[in-house]
Length: 323
Image 1 (cartoon, helix red, strand yellow):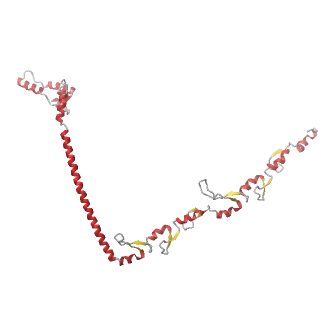
Image 2: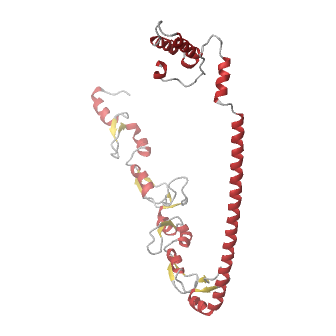
Image 3: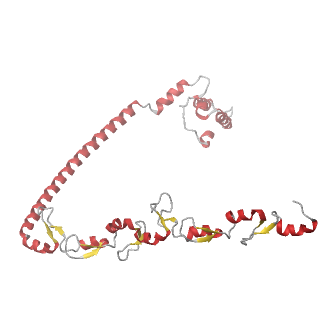
């Protein structure tokens, strides 16, 4: 586009389609003048638009998401009683925001307190019936129809004193197979006192017979036990004598070992060992008789020293070695 130099400033400020200007709706953006219409129609946050749910509300484009998420009465939203995770049971309905309050009142998954007094359990509404059947604080009537109403947790304690509870006669095990109301208990004992005494005597006789039978069984067991003990003892004695007859004595073992020794090994080495034998011989020299002694003494000494000694296996003490 051509124009005179004197008109260039006017062109830049008023006529040029590429001049940078601020948004006409004052959204804060600066853009080229030829993009203004497109910006206002599709981008400008100050431009007013209709709600997509056709709720009739016109809002600025910048507040559109906030309106849909928090204000639009026709927006589909999830029930607040949905499960917190995939594994938690909850309400899966999606309802319009304007119907939320009425749905909360009727939702089967709403949390409520147990209606029974002193029970502070928080339960799901659809489970109220199941909880009520097992709630320990539920007030129920006595099953014996005595007219009393007690909490379920105290029902067993009430039965222990309920006058309409069926109880067994104290002589039930002895033969009086009668179950009576607790309120008639004393009257039954009074009316059947004679029969009860007969049952008691017969029961005592039966117990005495059973006791005598047990005593007899114990005596028989004791006899059998004594016989088994005696048999075991005799068997042990026989085994012991048999082993003693077969086992070689110590003297026979020493003689066998003595005969098996090589001829070059002396008896002193067998008893004392090589080193102790040498030491013993040195000690014997200290006690040798002088040459001038009598022939009888020397012959006795030689006979006693050359006399073979039986082999011994116990190691001698130092005093015996010196001797």
